[in-house]
Image (cartoon, rainbow, N blue to C red; front, side, top):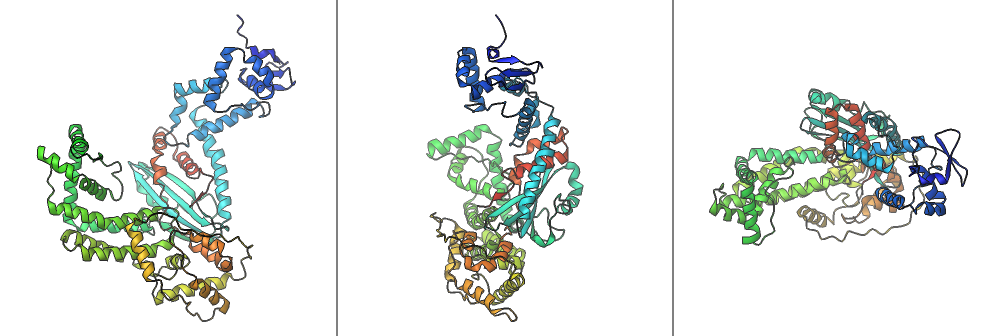
Length: 600
């Protein structure tokens, strides 16, 4: 039996052996590798009647069905219209290179026999190259395109805020620089300007890497465009507090816990209980049996899936408290560390003290949360801790912990009442305005805003009228403790003086503009402040400073998630992938959603 494919009844070989000519449309096709898959695809795309005739061969029908299922393309594109085979394979090379941007996919994939066989089944003509070939595609062609898109986006922003962060675990690290801004149509945007992969060899020069993070950028960043730089604890200047509010609040909790020896002893007891069940499968299964059968409860695990979280100690104590009844029954049969009644009470009260801190850190960690929320949330936390100190007097341990936490809060956040970036951002947020200011702070903010308005007056173009959009609040039940406190503060301050302070030497219409803004009722906290500004065109002279001050995030943009899903790249780095290449691949990954991610 002839082994020649029956597709040749519709094609003939040209004078050049690597070229086939379609007998139906007389078009030539370059057959690199001399396979027939692309010839059949041409028939399927351009000559369906002849393709059906060809498909009478049942073996071919089975092969086409498998191929279409794998590629999820019901109709294959015409290779003649896609260009020659070199162009087709070049596109395949780039698509395969981008596979390594996916989480947990290492360059080892292309050396796997199963993967090679799979690719050959899809297209026997495609040749898988060495890993260095795809590394070059990512780190030169794709990286350059992404870099260009990021530069174009940043160029369109009038003002930007930068943030630096450092993630470190198991002798591997990721140092990153992120950019926040607000476009002219009031869309909040974020991108990553630089990623730098670090390993154990870089430990001694991390400070040098941080210092050169901004100066080593491949793109020009005008100094006058940078509104502020938010640094986390690991990238803060030596001897200075971090600008990142999440880092500051975590420091407050950490220092307060270190001062409480009784709480540390209690957490050690909880740790012994957790370790007991972690080291014994039989004990863990018996505890699960007690929960399900004897208590008719939904079983929950004692083990911590994220032991490196900032609040892992308090989460561990919370899990132990949740399983108090099951642990008591277990302790009746087996030896277990005993927790006394007053200690159970301390764990419960500690959880209540920590709840607002955890809620606030979660809010600040959201990239959509701006610097305007810092002063209000610190005020709400202060009220919460003062209430806890008063209400939890029955527990000396927790009362002392709450008091120490309050002291740390007052010290670590003392400067926000004089920091203009937080004061003006809060004022320009229509949800808060002057609700958290005293007279001195009001005057300071008003003078700063009037000064800014006077300096930019006449430089902004008049924007076209925008259709009024009705702002609606989110219909979500408010169960957050810190939200309840914050709403209470805003409600009690509803009669706050909303007149504009006078400022000598400024023009009256600018003061009238601020007076008009101050007279507007505050919007609900669930509403979008940027949408409010966009729909109130009468305040267009203030647009420039709004985009400047509301561009600042509340916290440094941490790339912990990117770092966690890129452990395979660090393994590749140990196997020979250069640090520079890993850094560029991380940069592409962090900007993979079109260079800029909307913060909404």
